[in-house]
Structure formats: structure tokens, C-alpha cells
Image (cartoon, rainbow, N blue to C red; front, side, top):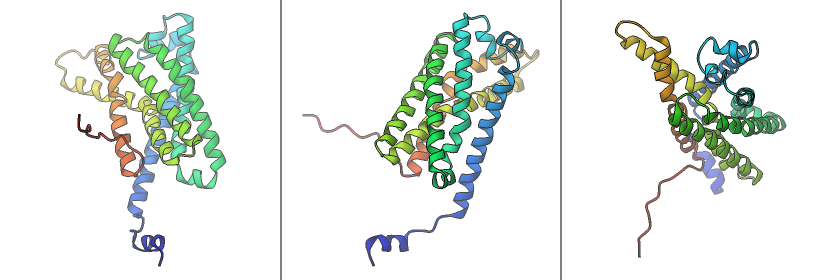
Length: 246
């Protein structure tokens, strides 16, 4: 018996429970991504920015900005929504195996969405409503979003598929910040509401919560992404001790 055959004979069979869990997690990511895409389309496709701003939230930050900034805002919304829409399908094993051409083309669409969306996001970081916290948080997110996606693109061009998969997991973890940002907003507003004494000031609660999300919306995502990368045996970051000094 060859070593390959011996390994196949002794390797544990795939766990159906694990596969079902993976499909469940993928479905949750897909549905939550589609929900945010639908929210963005419903909010910005049916009304101009000042009307959307009248309901409060993020549009109010950019409604009174110069036209160029408002255009950048819309460009970011459209291209980031595009990346969020096609991103989950890049992790569909069935799609990769049955329709590799579709996987490649949706990958190109994803890279385009991130390339344009991250540039627009970086510009928007200069006009955010939470000053330096927003500039460094959202600006750092935009730069890392572009960088991880570029690394994933270069890896697949070099036929380094394990690195490609690892980098694209990191990239989509940052894309998914569109979902986790709103999740954290809801959680932080709810916590303030539950612990409030007396009058409930919705705008103040929103402002307090939004001040925390520039970093909170993506840093935990990257930690989860690195855990998934290590769990799948893909190239991961490793902290190695420094060598002996002379």
C-alpha cells in the first residue's frame, strides 16, 4: 500500500455534523449580507440623501457635505453592496466545483467592488462624524480592506490557492463589517436603553454607540477570520520569537 493510500485509509471520514454546521454558518452570513444589501437599496435608491438624512443615522453625516463627497458616499454604498452581495458565494464549495468560471467572474466582480468601495471609504473617513476615532477606525478598515483583497488577488494569480483562500477570508471579514457595524449599533443602543434612568434620548444613544463602532465593527471580524484560517490549515499569521542576538 502506498503512503498516499495508507493516509486515505487511516484518515478520519468527514464529519457530516461539521459539514451541516458549515452550511448553516454560510447561510447565516449569506442572509445577513443580503439583508444589509436590501437595506441599502431600500434606503438610498428610493430617496435622495437629504430625505434619507431626515430619518437620522449615517446619511445625516453626509447630507450637507459638498457634492463630490456625496457622490463618493453613493459610490461607496453601491460598490460595497456589490462586494457584500457576491462575497458569500465565493466561499461556496459547490459553486467552485461545479461552475469554476462563475466563481472566477464573481471573484472579479468582488475585487472591483472592493477596489472602488475601499477608495471611496477612505475618502469618506475624512468626513466622518466621530473625528479621529472615525478617521483611524474607518480609514484603517478601508486600507486593510483593499490590501487583503489585493493579496488574495495576487495569490490566485500566482496559483497559490491556500494563500488565496486565507487572504480572501480576511478580505470578506472586512467586507462583513457592513453587517457587524449595524449589529454592534443595535446591541450598544439596546444596552444604553436598558440601563437608562429617566428620559430615553435616542439620538444621544446612537451617537454614543456610533463612536465605538469604527474599530469594533472589524477588529473582532479579523480575529474570527484568523481562527477560521488556522482551523482550515491555511497559511496564518504566526508570532515567532526573535532569534538570538549577537
